[in-house]
Image (cartoon, rainbow, N blue to C red; front, side, top):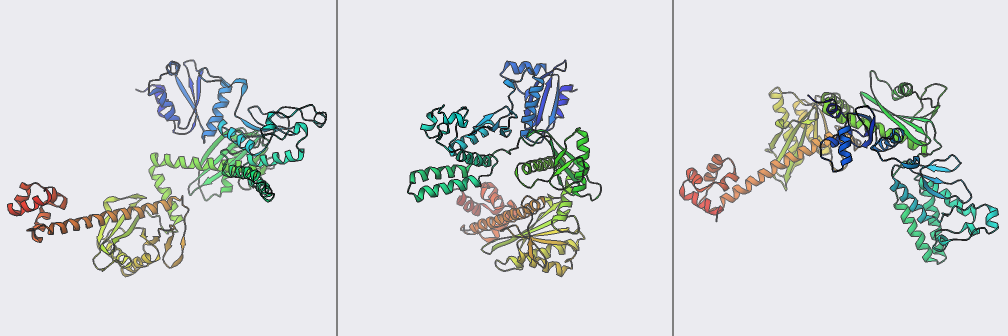
Length: 595
């Protein structure tokens, strides 16, 4: 019988989140984060630890609690908050109440730019928080390469500068600063650099690139090629840099953010709580649709319910489209900037949650998974019925030799390999894909009709309009034209063609419907090529057998009837061959392959 602790580990979800270990007195021992809660927590109990402290910790654990979040970033921030709140014995403490880092542009004359973990409401600008110190330092280094900013903490008032209170330092002499302390740089010039830096931190490089390009061209026009080369290197540095963090403006305070993703049966609503520019709460809800509710109706319903559940008193919400949630709440639909990035982040969280749900449903509720995919394919491919039974055809021939075709069968979106069929082309001379397609489609469905078997809801033809037209001819002859849906898929751009429609359909490259059609096409191609290769190989070996002196066609037939394959013929022993074709011919054949 498993213990209570073993049961708690067994039911942990395989999602990112934060776990908490408690001792027998329900005192918290440790808080940790994980990409996969079940895998990480299980690792504590499934292996021997080198660290004595870890072994002691594991012995003391009597219960486990966890909090599931949507992203690793959320897990990082939540872990940080819980450690500071509970100060568990086995966690490393952050001294001086330090938290995740921000980039600060100090409110002062000739503003400094630096990394800080303390947000002080003194009018300075803060950008972040960043979950990676490496990222923030790389960004600051990039800015220092591009712009000459002061690093000293002098109070550069106009009076102090005029009185010559400060002297330029080493930073000036090595080219990192223009010495505003001695009035060697205009305040306007310095502030222009700060304006461009703000755009870089926000991920908008256009203004900075334009300014640097103009400066480079100016140096080049004045024959100052060394200076122009330095600017060119900075332009290349900036152009190759990509921001690794979504920047949240700390001026965004006490705001709720909502977004929604829907499919045929369910809606997924993500909620983010923003305080002082930091995400302090994240939650995604799944709602089963009852009727044909619109996204607007579902989001309005969810906003009210989620705000009540989390006791939110925020007076402003950010949403992707207009909603009506009462006069007391300000509704903002951001179009650009930091606010728009927050809504996009919420939308990404909803999509990730939906994908995770699909993976779980596929395991625990396969029927629901199949029903959802079939319903989606019906809509995406513009079908009258759900394609529970799909058949796909492909031709294979090389330079007109050994023409064959393959038919693969999918049921409920999965291969039904026992129903796969090969076809040897009988009525077509030479490499004629169109005529070959016409033949195999006719033979396949004539047989199904004659034997009273179920017909598919969808036929997929590997090829464009030409192959599709050939298949249609056979359906017309059999009287099945309007009884089975049929499409063609062309390889080049994955265009999907319909009968009598010259304009193809293009599905989203990430669409599950397109992936199933591609899987059908690839499976038909693989199955056909395998048969084609085997047929060529068999013919080649038979031809080789005919070249052996004293071995005639009838002898070859006798050998193949007995051994069932040419491979077994070539690997048979002399005794086995003698029993089938006699001693004389057996020796000739055996000696040919075993010289």
